[in-house]
Length: 148
Image (cartoon, rainbow, N blue to C red; front, side):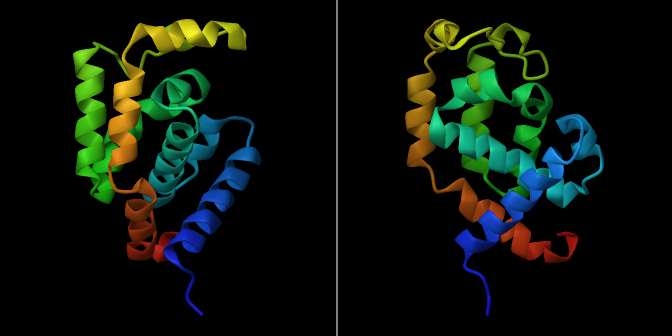
């Protein structure tokens, strides 16, 4: 019996989370993944953060390791609208994805100040209006099933 796209996505995503958790840090785990696995992990974390709290949450929570690669991964899976949206937001706001130290916070009370820095709501609304990123990721998994 074939898994649905949603089941396939969740299975591979949770496997990648377990793999990362079994390592001392995210960068080490990523270095031991193949390209297809890296793409799925990076985009899954990106999408989960955006679905939960938006782009600001992604920048604050998880992205010093992942953010520099999101655009390339979006292109890899064919999510061009998502990539263009992210590229435009980053360019319009002069954000350097490989230098997100300014998004580090010490406690949750600092989060509101981060959200006020840029128009994250407009980005988040536009992102939610796009086709589901999980569909692109599931298609990428199916096309590269031997890599998982």
